[in-house]
Image 1 (spheres, rainbow, N blue to C red):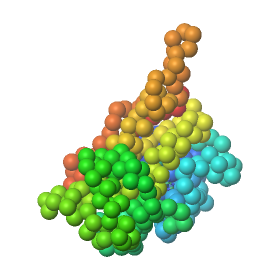
Image 2 (cartoon, helix red, strand yellow; image 1 turned 60 degrees about the vertical axis):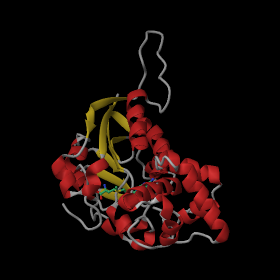
Image 3 (tube, rainbow, N blue to C red; image 1 turned 180 degrees about the vertical axis):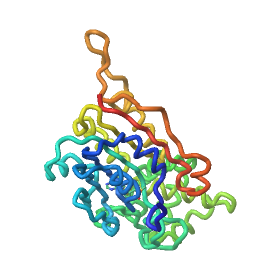
Image 4 (tube, rainbow, N blue to C red; image 1 turned 135 degrees about the vertical axis):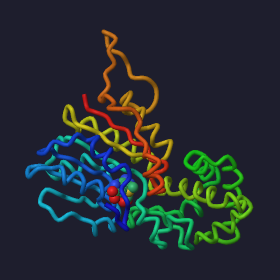
Amino acid sequence: MRSNYHNPVLLKETVDGLAIKEDGVYVDVTFGGGGHSREIMSRLGERGKLIAFDQDEDARRNVIEDDRFVLINENFRYIKRFLKFYGVKKVDGILGDFGVSSHQFDVAERGFSTRFDADLDMRMNQKGSVSAYDVVNEYEETDLRNVLKVYGELRNASAIAREIVSARKTELIKTSDQLKEVLRRFLPKFKEHKILAQIYQAIRIEVNQEIEVLKEFLLQTPDLLDKGGRLSLISYHSLEDRLVKRFIRDGMFEGKPEKDFYGNINVPFKKVKGLVVPSEEEIKENNRARSAKLRIAEKL
Ligand SMILES: C[S@@+](CC[C@H](N)C(=O)[O-])C[C@H]1O[C@@H](n2cnc3c(N)ncnc32)[C@H](O)[C@@H]1O
């Protein structure tokens, strides 16, 4: 289903990954336009249940009117707490389609897109306390450099951070056009969009603490999933994908899991299939799909 709000990526593959049981309980932690959620609902029976999360209040307009569905307008970093509040202790599958929706990119005032001039914002949760303005105008130069280097994978992160810090001493950088002007010399014509997109991505990940949130979320999943329950997760950034991949393999983000007395490794998941990526056809239809990486795991 095509929607103006968001066109779901790897729709069939991601929902197939959940191996839906008709009377199962599922969670979609990134509801957005509800494309994946609607597909899950279409596979549930009368006794099935779907609980969805989205921290963006705009996502509420896509709510599914159905007794088997609940939308929680909160950050999925608190998944366990909110599921408990709704009386849910164990679930049969969790779907995540991380990052931002097309809607968030398309509304100029949200500040996510390099296409428009807007106030520096980029908060997925409109009530969030840190915006792109704070990162650009308040961060120490070294912190800004790290954000640009690690999240934006920018080779000249140091020079870009220096330029921002020097410019904001004369005048605070309030809008995306101002930021573009400050960074003009780093944006050669033929690469302007690509580099700007990397800078925006880095700031967005920092504003929304996307890496920390992903880790906190992943660490709660083994406890929440019943044996045989599925994780079906789409990432769009190499850092995210690496975290998901390692967590599925080792149950941790760094290092190697310890072996027990008998040499067995105690890990919470087994992977189902290898990496799944969109077909060329899907990418041609939906350019946003180009960097998607889907990983599926089963709780042991
Ligand atoms: C790529 S879109 C998901 C699109 C959705 N699968 C669909 O089919 O329409 C990601 C959504 O997740 C939400 N989101 C991202 N991080 C979140 C978080 N930590 N907590 C809650 N929602 C989050 C965003 O606001 C956005 O609406």
